[in-house]
Length: 237
Ligand SMILES: Nc1ncnc2c1ncn2[C@@H]1O[C@H](COP(=O)(O)OP(=O)(O)O)[C@@H](O)[C@H]1O
Ligand SMILES: [Mg+2]
Image (tube, rainbow, N blue to C red; front, top):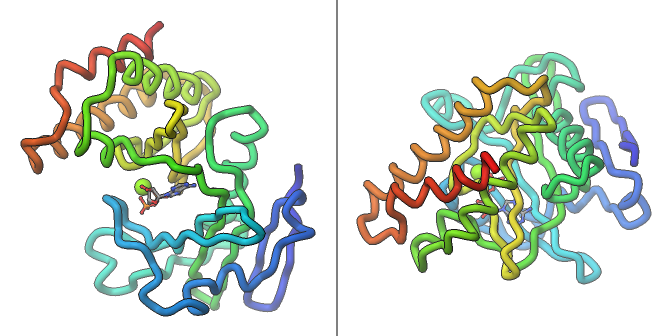
């Protein structure tokens, strides 16, 4: 599968070949079409996410936003260093590559960048993982079985073994579907690089910390730190 580029003076859109026949550029403006508060509430993430449907297919539109202090200055603009260096282009390329490797990630649909001379803003559209909930959300309702923890660990390992470093591995970026299928999402700023134990273990530690943090914030969370060992078993098997 290839990316099809639609170029204008200050804008580029990259569309995955297989959705090209259906694709409409106004998909990126869906939030305007149905009201400005259509962006969904942040679910533990930084970015603005909106779900929409076209011809019975469900998509997710995400606007790239900044976290942290600079957000006060500029919420959604980044320094422009060329089209291929934009977050949206890099993420759609990564999603495409991972899909082709058979990894459980959302299928990419399209990415858009609007660039000025110095800064750009960007959005990405991908296919929704149907009926899934984030690991963080599930743990507010129930415990995960040891087998489920196991398969979270095994899934992360598949990515690591193929050199995919998820730089923000946390409980909000792991989606679990009704039949227990696991997907990783949110590959903003992620890279493919030769496997190294150091970055792989740093990712696992980040996930463990994110669970601890959620537990500190919500004592009723259905999670005990010892359960992380089940994940580690799945990871190391
Ligand atoms: N492809 C998808 N399918 C289903 N839900 C998604 C998908 N992408 C994002 N979401 C939902 O939106 C939330 C935020 O998306 P994410 O890509 O993690 O952005 P961020 O964390 O930067 O806000 C996720 O935690 C998840 O609940
Ligand atoms: Mg996220």
